[in-house]
Length: 121
Image (cartoon, rainbow, N blue to C red; front, side, top):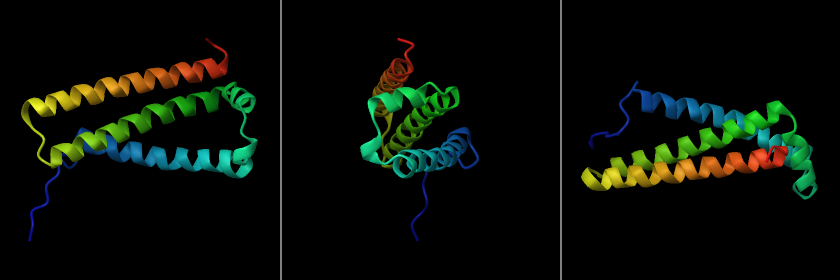
């Protein structure tokens, strides 16, 4: 039987954060789909409607947390999948640096858009 290998240390911080972010994403994604696909159908979602929703502090903060959590969860998962496939040494450090920079850029751009939609920029 093949050995099970994971770059996550069971019970470690990375393992724990991956599970917590997954649980948060399930709840927020359900909220997102319900609000933007059942309450408001896709053809009813407009730029002005988005600006109006972003005026609600709770909605704004939820969407910003959704962005940060989804980015962390996705990038952490990709990185650990690559480590599980044998990524090591200098390549591992380079991939981590590129993924970190891409994550920071994605979150910064997303927050910028969210602030613009809220009328703060």
